Length: 127
Image (cartoon, rainbow, N blue to C red; front, top):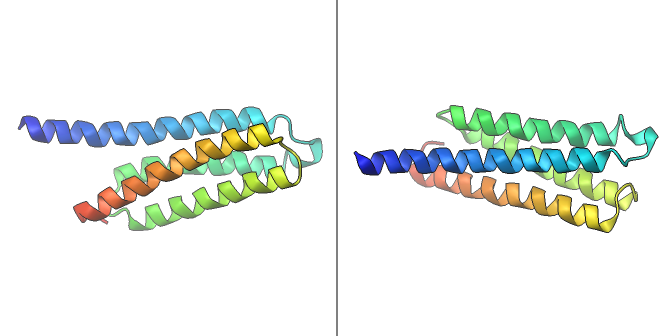
């Protein structure tokens, strides 16, 4: 009984940790996006902001669903699109190298956690 409670708490804490990391990423990216040029605030900046919110939404959805494969696939695709959009913002010189590095570290951290979550779910066999 105690083992099952600990395993359940471990799953909840893993989920809550990825949710917290996504929230941290959203907060940092929103601060970073305030410095975008005016003509990009409603285009690329809005898309980056929207992708962050989508990742948070998908984390909640993946936690609630029993069959997670399609949700994980969508989560992984949106995560990669966000990474590419941040790279594009750097290439267009909307953000400096320090902001780019910090933002990518946060995105990478979410990606590593997502990969671990996918692997753990596949090992358990509930995808």
